[in-house]
Image (cartoon, rainbow, N blue to C red; front, side):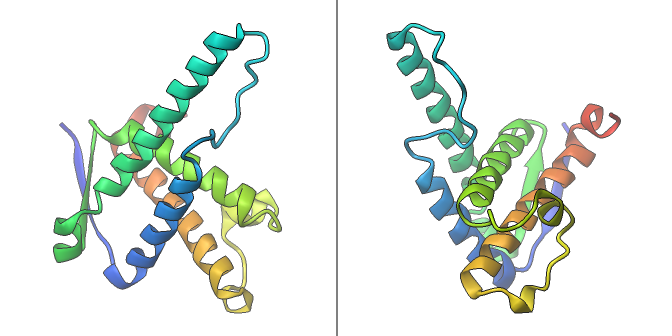
Amino acid sequence: MKRIEVKLSLGVVAPLLDVVKAVGDSLDDELAAPVALEQIDKDLRSEWRDELIAAQNGDVRNLLALFDSEFFASGVVNFDEDNADAILRSCAAVRLRLRERHLSVFADEVLETGEVLLEEMAEPERRHFMCYLFLATVQELVIEHLEPSLSDE
């Protein structure tokens, strides 16, 4: 099984994990990317929506669980083939919510390139932006090293 170990700076990552946790909590009862389910029976729609939310929130919990006491002792987080898909989905969900709720003043191109003047941002906005970039980097690592079929496209 493929596995990557990533050494991270605790001083940089710990505050970003607080942002991930807070944003993840804001997803408790709604999807990061709403799905149009109007054509489906109301009872089935509700059940399906609840299952999607439960899966999304489970993915976010799994992502946060990677940053456990071992991570805080060593600064090392491990990604492997078993958790790759959940990591990609959870990073996407949190990034979508960050974009929608905290970074909507930025064009998509700015968010994807990271070309901003961090020193001109207010502290909360800077943390949200840095978290967005951190999660994008995690996604890139997973795609490059654990999902080779995605990086070849």
